Length: 78
Image (cartoon, rainbow, N blue to C red):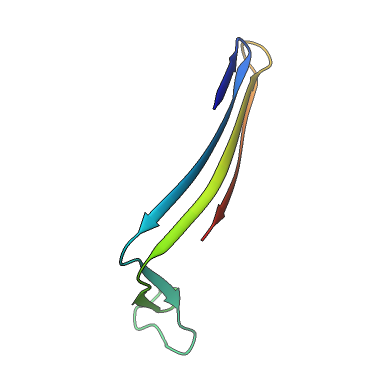
């Protein structure tokens, strides 16, 4: 859903993604990294099916020809 104005716009959107064979990597603190500078070790696991749902709101305001602002707020679940 969009609302446009000569000095900016507002945009709102919702989404839902469905994944089969979703593979997720999680850090395992019990393992030591073997590469210098690495940030730990991840273990990857297949979680089967996954749903990610969320919404996003974007606001854009042009104050004058030189100054403007843009803000986005998002929420995700899943």
